[in-house]
Amino acid sequence: MAITEQTPLEQDFLPDYHLDAEQLKQIELKMIEDARAVAPDSIVISWVDPTHEYSNFLRTKEAENFPEVAETDMYYELNQVYLAVVDTRGTGSVAHAATINFYDDTPTLEDASLGAETITPRTGFYTVDSLIQRENFTKEEFAAYYAEKGIDLNTTISIETNFKINQEMPLYEDYLGSADLVYLAMFQWGLRQKWDYSTITVFATINEKQINSFKRLGISVAPLMGRTDLKTEEDELGKYSFPVTVDFMSLHDVLSGIGLDLPIIEYKSATTNN
Image (tube, rainbow, N blue to C red):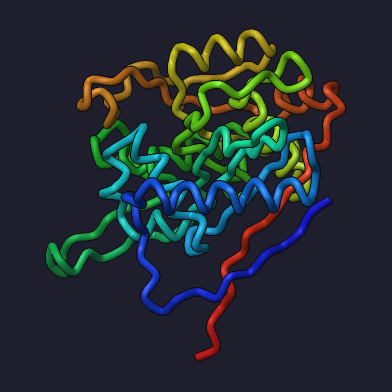
């Protein structure tokens, strides 16, 4: 079951990571109300476009966990979508969220602010591009590595941030936490794309708790580029991070047996007629 809600896109829409408490409350209440209309006393997955008005609720919550995201380049802002786990049980809450980036095979982008001679290789994945900028590897090496493994980068996505909003959300079906529901939602999204399962890969940066969660569920991960020595942006901030790939077939083997089909809402930004 799914509904699509469109909100006219304001000409002057800007990403905002600093909504006040009242703004946050009102948006969360509306998202819970929308979700209850789809599935009361359950879990609903909301997909929010980056220029929908609700996206700034998720940006603000994201910045509470990762303050550095407030400096995100507009290129990545527009190449992402927000996934939100909405709990309609009890009083309800927007319990968890993640940001998803998509592959973009733009050869180079000129940065006019740095001069016409400056070119920036980009993949569309913030984490991968950050690693490239820190000279861990080149864009060409990244593409060649996964091509050799038979991975079509056009059937890959990257989970850039993954964060709890409601720390007290009860387990769903008595064993699934909100982070588990994010990966279940990603799995169901992959099925809807009708891609070749053998080529779908999810890039992610995980911490020790998430590593343990994967082990508990039986989901296998591999180090990004097969390396454990990557210099990351999180290292510079004094945080532990481990860039990995999650094999979709592994997700399929584990999650297809769960038998849950989480209902969704898609919040699409209306296009303007120029």
